[in-house]
Length: 339
Image (cartoon, rainbow, N blue to C red; front, side, top):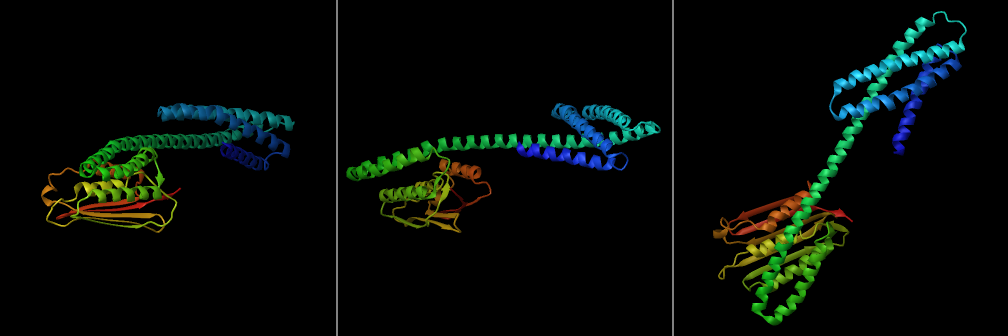
């Protein structure tokens, strides 16, 4: 607000100086000074209480023709008023009135041109302000819609993740009760992390990686001996932020759809590393059953995570999903932000 007022003051001060310098060539110093003050104040009132109100009224209803007619009429009246003011000032300064009528006619047309010019400038400023405000409101509405959609996706991911954990826990209880109790303690930590962190829009990358490592180890523990699992982590100390559970969804998907041939080598290979201080890469590859590729539906979590990436990282991520014979690959690159 201070900047707008300061700019407005500087503009009208510039108008006063410009008018004063123009009138100084034809009038005395006192006459030019008084006339310049009268012109500046009258034009300021004309803009504030006439042109701006007309613009605010007719710009909103897109009535440009009506605005032009009313603004032109107001400009003519203001030019007449300025001419009268000039005549009165000249009468006060000069005792002789010879040639003043011709001078007033010249002043009228000059004031009319200035008034029309100022009115056009004011109209342009009001039009710019309204367009700027409309764009601002559109951006606010857009961000609100995006935030709502992100929250909606987060609530949809919650039961999906919990459902997978409960299935895993059921498997472990049937396999070995003692081992299940130990792993239940680990799962409780995961669930605690999941319940609290899933409510945040952004979390620390280190926290997400720690969660992912723990989850990966649990999946390794419950997997059969015929499943070869390898993982590489290269995440140096950082202050980066990430949306929660965007990485773990790909790990879930790999363990969910990995092939289960008893007589063949089944594998999952995971690699996560950070380069250039803020570019995160995730690469994960798992074997699949080619006969099921056409019949299996794409996982719900995988569809949602792509939507979350679109909403949270527009133009700041690259995701490649590919399937070749009996392997499925995911390659993700994320440009992350600092805290």
